[in-house]
Image (cartoon, rainbow, N blue to C red; front, top):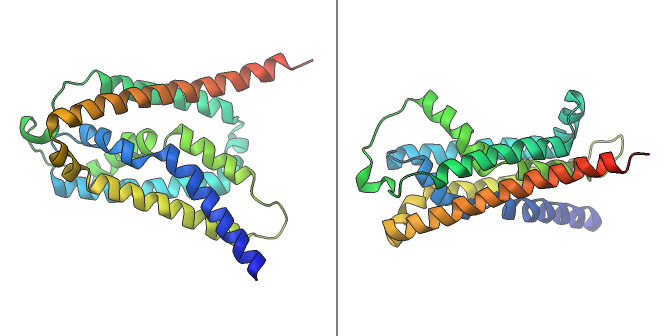
Length: 224
């Protein structure tokens, strides 16, 4: 019993510890504010909840069946990294070229339907901003290293759900209170943080793409 509990705790900590730094919801909060310029606080709360739920589903699916999905379509993980890195680079580049105004006084508030919020919550706010190709790659790798065998590993399944749930909760809290954080720091400081976060996101996209390109090049060069 103690061995099973220790294995469960180890797996849960491993999954949450590996996913949280690369998802980085705190660092993405300023970018979330930029992409929701003109949205009301209530709309941002709804978006934060939807993004957290979408992120949870993506992470759990990537851990449990990510390798099977890639195998079904004949897609390798490096290809996912290259394609996803390009999407992240494009998103970060558009953020870097935005005007230096935060959404507070300069942007007019507008309304959006529930379907519009759901669509925007998934792309680009969940994918690729929050749970991007880097997070998916890590989640798939974690799933590929899970215990093998014919019997279902309920301990690992529960640990995966718990670890992904922890990350989803941090996503919700970070985005839910991002506007309050912006009011504390002020527009000037937040614009600086947004530029830095966008540049870091651009670098992350380049790194993800390069990881995929390097793996593809190694696979070609080592062939007899």
